[in-house]
Each structure stands twice: as structure tokens, then as C-alpha cells.
Picture 1 (cartoon, rainbow, N blue to C red):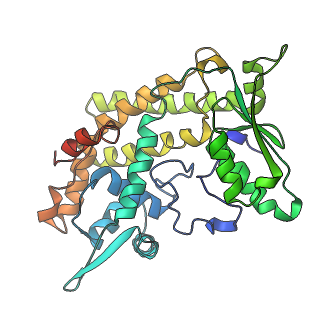
Picture 2: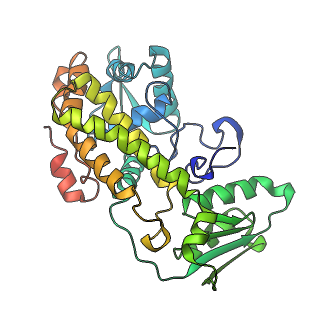
Length: 338
């Protein structure tokens, strides 16, 4: 069995098989889900990511052929791309319109909100760490076997909130998430099977020992190091001017795709509970630098693709920097064509 940290789905997931809990594959599409979207992954999620990156705050609808071609840059077949469009329309994330014999699609208000919320989480993750007050939030639960679906869902929601399993039925977090946990227990109909409380550890136990027991920090460190090696090389090539617009579009999405997995894997433990020389800060800096530096070339490629089918819309495609979602007024300005 793989490390716990790598098995965290998006919030609200259940144990329904084959994506039944999220039929559109769009749960937290801009961040949170650990599934890969580039090259061989999930076309609906990939398309939403691309629209969030290059069609942010745009109300105009794009020709379906342009969106199919955009997905084609990631080796998505025409048939799979058109199926993705239909799926997103079915689930209210894209709006379909017709002009003569041509079909167009645009983001729904719901999709725009989902993308904004996800992007804020992605771009704010790892920027700062909060000090720890030395108190743990603990959740003790015993869900009967006949209700194992709720038990599975509770575990995944606890992971999303940053909890780790100290024991099978005892999960811990250094943050004060008692109210959120009670809400989850109530929503799942198992409030009478769980208890939430706050406590301090007693000697000889200490915070770092407990954090190593509840989270696979060695695995997480390795994931950060792998990301850092990938992003560092790509960033150096970008600064050297050897990354073409075609490569930049795919590479920027790959950087986003890799980084967006970390908020689900990393509970953002306070510094007091982490080993020395923790790599998250360096990885976050490289993500921001690489994502931002690839933006102009990637947006140029998107304009080229849209221009084949709707030259009058191509100039509206643009990139935004990583801080656009953190500062809305600044983000609105940056969303203007570049």
C-alpha cells in the first residue's frame, strides 16, 4: 500500500466507485485533486484548468473547435475532447450556445466560482506558516461496519482538513478545526459516533514525534524534492529563452498540475512540528516563479489556437500572474489582454 499522503482525494469524496461521487471529474478542479490532467489524464478537468488560466473573467463563448484544438495540445483526441465538453455542459460548468451552424462554449458562473476558490487555495498554499499554540484537535470515532461508506468519507474529509491518523479511530491536527469536524460528522449522519476535543501532549511525548506518527513526512519531503528538481530545471530553461510557446503551454499546466496536489497531501504543519530544512518554502517559490515566467509564451500559444477559429476573440486570451487570485482588484487589472 502506498503512502497515506498520496491517497487524498478532493473534499466531499465518497467511496462510490469510478468517480460516481463526482461524475464530472471536476471536484475542486483548480486545486485539491491529486489526479494528473496533462497528456493522459482527465480532459474535463484539464479544460477547466486551461480556461481558468487563459480565459479568466471572460464572458465571451469560444468556438467548440478551438477548445478541441486546445485540448489537442495535450494529446487529447477529438472524440475525448468533445465528450469532455458534453460532460461539462451536463454538470452545469460550461454553457453551450449556437451561432448558425457553429457551437460555442463558455464558463458558467458556478465554474468561475469553483475555479476562483481553487486558485486562491493553490496560490496561497505555502506562502506563510501560522505559529502553533501547542494544542491538538483530536477526533475519536467508531463508525459501525454497516456504515463504512460514511466512515470512508469521514476519513477523506478529515485528511482534507489537515488531520492525520494517530490510530485508526483517533485523528489529530495542530489546528483548531473542531467546528469544521462537527459539521462533517453531522452532514454524514454520524455525529453520535464521534467526539471532538482539544488537548496537549504530556512528556515524554513531543510534537515532532507525534507528527511523524500521524503523517508520512519522509514521503512528503521526497515529493517536494522531486517537484523542486523538475521546476528548477524548467525555470532555468524559461529564463534562458529556450522554451517555445508550444512547450510553454504544456509545461505551465504541468507545473500547476504537480503543485496543486500538495494542498491535499501537506497538512501545512507549523514549523514547530516539522523536521529542520523543510522543503515546502523553496518548492513554493519555484512554483510561483516558474508558473509566472511561462505565462506570456503560454498565452501566446493559446491566442494562436483560438485565432484559427475566431480571430476576433483571440486577443482576449491572456495569462494572469499567481497573485491575481489573492488580490481581486489587482487580479481584475491583470486579466486584461497582455
